[in-house]
Amino acid sequence: MLELGIGSLAELGETLRAVDTDTLMERMDYRYPPGAVRRLDDALLWAYGEAYVDLHANAERVPALRARLAKMRG
Image 1 (cartoon, rainbow, N blue to C red):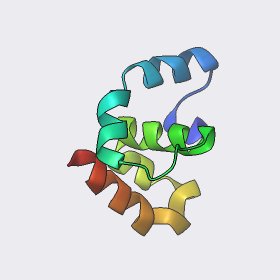
Image 2 (image 1 turned 90 degrees about the horizontal axis):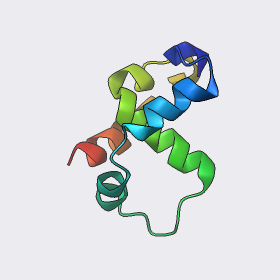
Image 3 (image 1 turned 180 degrees about the horizontal axis):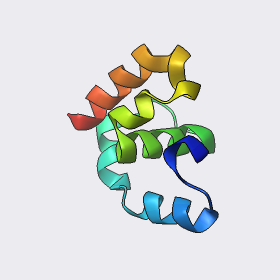
Image 4 (image 1 turned 45 degrees about the vertical axis):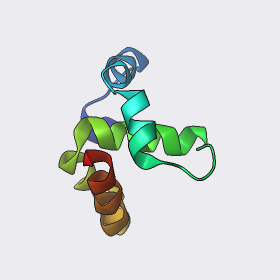
């Protein structure tokens, strides 16, 4: 969260409120209901796009995140 500049739960809440959850769920078409960690990961990916993909902490997940981002963008 800190890499994104999110320093409080209030800031995280603001970010998550801006996510169109219905559209995100529709585009991702999950086979199984996603867990809380996956939902948060996808919401942050939706909100921050390439900036989220490029975070140092995500270095090992770049191909998977780019594929998920492309799916989100339809």
